Amino acid sequence: MMKAGEIARQVRAQVPGLVVRGVRMLDVAERVEEIIRQLGGRPAFPCNISVDSVAAHYSPTPGDVSIIPPNSVVKIDFGVEVDGYIADTAITITDNATGEVLKTAVEEALKAALKVVAAGVKVSVVGAAIQSALARYGVKPIKNLTGHEIQRYSLHAGVSIPNVAAGDDARLVEGHVYAVEPFATVAEGSGVVVDASPATIFRLNPRQPTRRTTPEEEALLENIQKRFNGLPYSLRWLKDLGGIEDLHQRFVKTGRVKAYPLLVEKTGKPVAQAEHTILVERDGCQVVT
Ligand code: MN
Ligand code: MN
Image 1 (cartoon, rainbow, N blue to C red):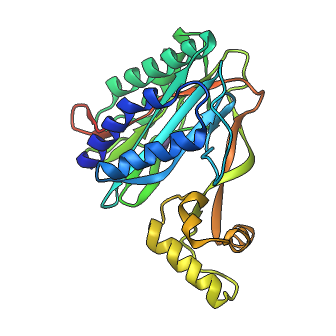
Image 2 (spheres, rainbow, N blue to C red):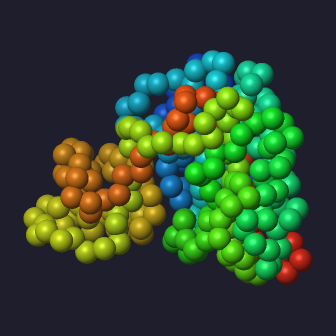
């Protein structure tokens, strides 16, 4: 866990230098993933590069030619896996005034959340800290995006950590690992994200297939399982297999593979995000990333 966190910290420090005017999103994502591998980790999921009203879940596709647009609010969200242990972190990079306010707000909200974290604290208390910090900047939390517990080989496991004073009475547990990730939009925004297309991130569903599979399908499923061990992946990471798109699309249609929808702010307003992975301790927490 700590090694994954150390790698994530080093990558984080390099991200602002990668996100420059005119750069291709594909190059940024592949560079982030390459640095993770060079440092001895593996990407725990495809590097997300989500622009403006896209809050999360865009990862460049194979052959993607889109560039990071100027005057934008860009979230770079990546994960590092070492032996199944995952560090999940995100930063916002922006070159406009609205983005600056949103970025400062989510970073301060994350700090406020980490201040109240300790073993036994209710997740709603963490959400309340985030919500009131965001309110001080006049911005609105995205109430249907949450932080999450992280377990070995499982990115979203156990309890959720809301970005508002809501949620159940679940309490943080000493020794457990969580990602805390405030998302915010401007005051005029809806504060809600909705599902959109395209899906660019996939995960093999753990359940058994309900229909008979061909040997060709079985080989691809086994390959995906072996490569990613149930963690999310990009079709970029299956490029070497060549021409599997149609087969893969069938898995999505039949539910064998989960496709993560793009998450977009309902009224099209820009969204910022800050995220750290933490280890909860008796009297506080250790920031892993
Ligand atoms: Mn993340
Ligand atoms: Mn996360």
